[in-house]
Length: 298
Image (tube, helix red, strand yellow):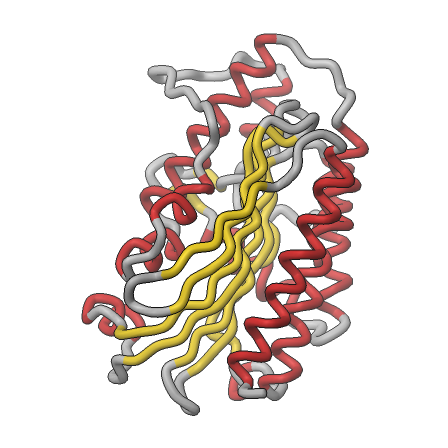
């Protein structure tokens, strides 16, 4: 099997595994699947989850697309070739309960030719309320996965997540970060492409244990209308980042991707309240104080 086909098939399995785990954890709704084809080449499987017991809206999407890379993207990637292949799994979940966090994962592979190909991806957590024990649990599991492959991965990718998931115009992080990497290749990892794929798949398989545990910890926590108002405000920050800065959103739009799949990441309901400032000595103020780079959660 050609390597890029091997990657795509492995990512399909990851999508299946995660969907099954999330349906079990939620215990209510099930994923709706839509198969689609891209006009320029390739297609994917969009799986959307709505109005579950825990998950209000979310998606676990797989795509494998190919064709001609737009000139603007070639310039951004600093590549000469025109033909490209890209495959990946992208996940965003927005829960009902404000004490269950928003989570995002993306694992992907991009190829133009034998010399121009790489892996990228990551997992990050956006709590509406930062719960320290949950944050430490999340980062410990990510570190354990990274350490299986390279002890330098977690500190490097954790810093890259802090820097990437940063809302510049707000001067705050989107959440508590996680790990983020791009352009992983043999020349910058001391691993071959098969080993890098193994790391990508291991990270993908970290997702379900992490999130199902966070669901179980917080799904029954009681909340008030005030907690939900704060949740809507935090969702608005998530939307701002995705629409202004997210490179995956930009890539999808510039390569004629499927709009509904690309914008699946947006929450079902969010609010923008003019100049909202949390009151001092409140859980909301405490959460805001932790939306900064460089916190050591492990």
